[in-house]
Structures are given as structure tokens and as C-alpha cells.
Length: 176
Ligand code: FES
Image 1: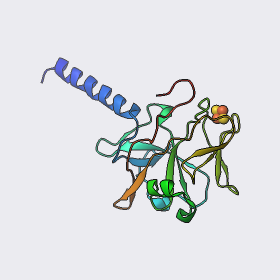
Image 2: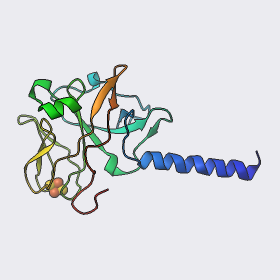
Image 3: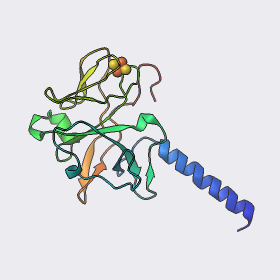
């Protein structure tokens, strides 16, 4: 292979990795903690029941490409009592772990505030409140729609994406 071909192949690989990093999570992806240079796939035991959200990215397991190419791929994990989950949410959960986008459906701030007594997620920008036990539905504030959920399952003890996001991730202006 000559130098030019090698260079083009390298460029193609780089473009492919960029695409994969910006693509939405897909079935079969594993989850890694935001900032974990070791890219260790998370298990349900890594998430404490009732604790504040853990911010994670999906990772394509084959290439180990972390899908952190866009903030629209930010995911939050919570571990909740399965008995307290609605039937729809329980079906999307894995050992009590539920996953949602962390991008508020109002104007796109990070939904990163955990109201432990109420077991609710809150967006600090305009105080929208979402119920992660019930499909991420809006219970207060100006958010116009639910937080899209990311259905999970367990494979070989590891948390794995079961299906793509249940709805488009994004906010009032700029649905993606
Ligand atoms: S951006 Fe979240 S409530 Fe406005």
C-alpha cells in the first residue's frame, strides 16, 4: 500500500470514528462513565439505588468508540426501586436502572438536579421537573414533552442499550 492510500485509509478511519462518536446510541452499545479514560462498561452494581444521576456515554463495544461527539448524546442513569416504576418504565429498565437523555426538552439545559425525597429530576434553568419512575413525564415547569428514555437490558452482567431513544433527543428549537 503506498503512502497516499495509507493516508486516505487513515482519513477514512478517522471520519468513521467521528461519525460513530456523534451517532445516537444503538442497541448493543455498552455504557461508560463520563470522564472514564479506561472506558469500563458499567454494571447495575455500579449505580447506587436512589443516588443522584450518573452521567454516562454509550460506547460501541467493537471499536470502543465512545459516542461523546455531541452533547445531545449525554445520558443519565438512575437506579430506582423496580416496584415504584410504571409498567412501561420497568420494561425499559435493567435491575432498576433507568436511562434518559440529560438534555432538557425545553431549551436544552442539562437536567442534572436530583430531588431525592421526591425521586424527581429537575432542570436548573427554568425548573422543569420530570418523573423518571414514569417515563420521564413532565410534572412541572415549561418543558413541552417527556425526557426521551433509552431502554436498557443486561448482557453478561453489563448494562447494554436495548433499543434507541424512545423519541428524538433535543429541545423546542432544534430537534435532532
Ligand atoms: S431548559 Fe430546562 S426548564 Fe428550561
